[in-house]
Image (cartoon, rainbow, N blue to C red; front, side, top):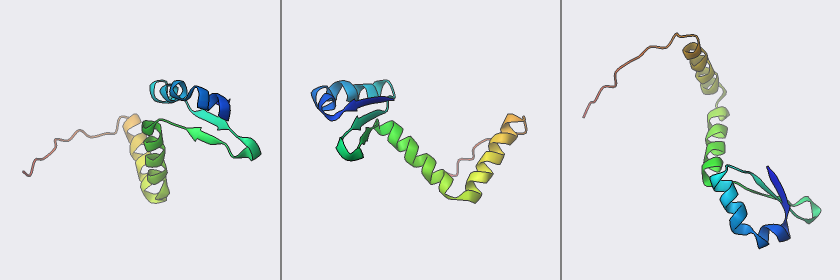
Length: 85
C-alpha cells in the first residue's frame, strides 16, 4: 500500500495508475479533512466485489468453505462435464 498526497498523485498520476495495475498496489490519496481516495486496478476491484457478493449469503459461503475443506482433506470427486449441446 502506498499513501501519497493529492498533489503528488496529480503530478505522477500515470505512475501510480501503472503501479495499481502492474504491481497490484493499492494507492491511498490523502486529502484534507480525511476525505481520502483509494486507487485500485479494475481486476482488484472486481475481485473485491466478487468476494463481497460470495460472502453476502451466509449459507452459500459456509457451503463453499465446507467444499474447500473437503478438497484439502482429499475428499473431492472428479467428474466429467456433460455437454447437452
